[in-house]
Image 1 (cartoon, rainbow, N blue to C red):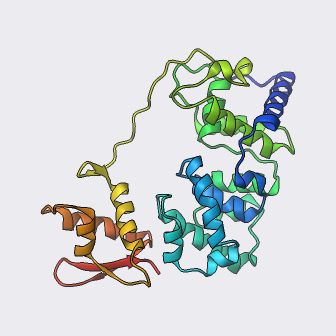
Image 2 (image 1 turned 90 degrees about the horizontal axis):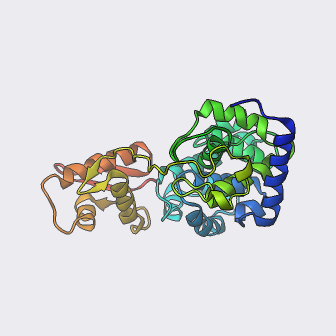
Length: 307
C-alpha cells in the first residue's frame, strides 16, 4: 500500500462522516456516552452479535445501574443476569473489573489506555474502544469489521476472506481517522463493515466507500474454514458449558446441585462416558470461577454457580 494522498484521505473522511451522520445505526451505547454503559457494552460485544447485546444490555443495566452496584453483587447474580449471552467467564471478568475500578479508582473508569489494560477482561481493542467512545481520545480502534474494511479498501485483495496483518492495519488505522473525530469515524466504518462490506456477501455497489476501494467488485467469495472445535455428542464443548450453567441458574439461594441431576438435565439417555465428560467440563468452569464444585461419593460431585 502506498502512502495515502492527503486530498484523497480528506475526501474519504468527509464521505464517511457525512454518510454516518445521516445513516448511523441506533444503539444504547452510542446514545448514552456514560463510560460505565460503554464498558459493559464493549465486554458484551466481544463475542456476541450486536442484536443480542441490543436486547440484553438494557436488562443488565436495570439490574446493575452503576459500577458500584455491579461490584457489590454476587457472582451468581451476575451469571444469572448474563443468561443468553454465552461465554459466561466474561461476566466474571466484568464484575472483577468493576471491583478493581471501585477499589483502585474510586469508581471512576480510567481514561488512559495503559490503566484500562490493567483491568480484568480488557485487551487492546476494548481499551482503545473505551478511550475513544467514552472519553473522545485520539486513538485508532480496530475490530474485526474495521480490519476487513481496511484490508479491502487499501489493498487489492483477491478473496472475501483475505485480511492484511494486524500490524499493517494498525499502522494504517493510526493515519486514517480525522483528529477529534475518532469516535464518529470508527463507528462509521464499523457500520459500513456490518451493512455493506460484510464477510461473505459484500454489497460493493451500495457501499459509500466503493469509489475509494481497491477491491470493490473484484473479490471472489470464499468462506473461511472454521477452526476445529472439540465435539461431544455432535456439539462443541462451549455448548455443553452453556447448558450446565443454565441448569445451575435455576438453582436459587446458592444451593448445590448433584452431578446426577445435571446429567439428567443434559441427556435424555445416559452413556458410559457422560459422567466423565461432565466432570471435565465442570473442572474447566471452576478454573474460570464460573462454578464451584464439591467432591462427593465416588465419582459424583456437587456444584453450583460461583458465589
